Length: 135
Image (cartoon, rainbow, N blue to C red; front, top):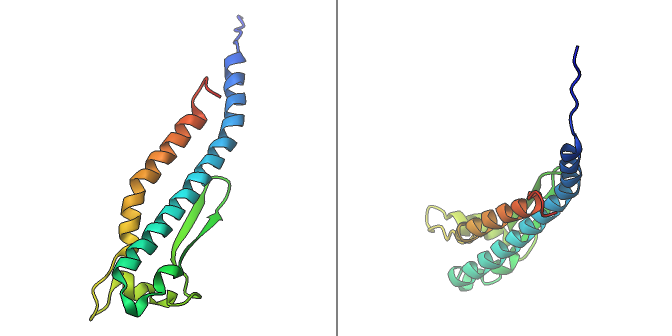
């Protein structure tokens, strides 16, 4: 019967690296999500200012966002008009339109602009956080 010996030092080094990296990467992902939500909120309100007209002049100020954690690895941003604010209840009508009004798609356009930036920043945060030998 023969016995084999394994050098586990590199496995232990990887374990220590991941133990330090994963929390930092989670924190960076949350920061990217917050920044993305702020950008979408800002752009949505700017789009709404240019399309909502005089009848919905308070609507752009109703756009807000909330950040909510859903476990240790999921952070979600909810962005849109707050129905509790002045003219916030007009959000569905202005965004999606009606039988007599075309959709403005202010939020959809803001999301389309932010999505590639968000994805790139999230990928960068993951690469930096999990890169072996750089932590």
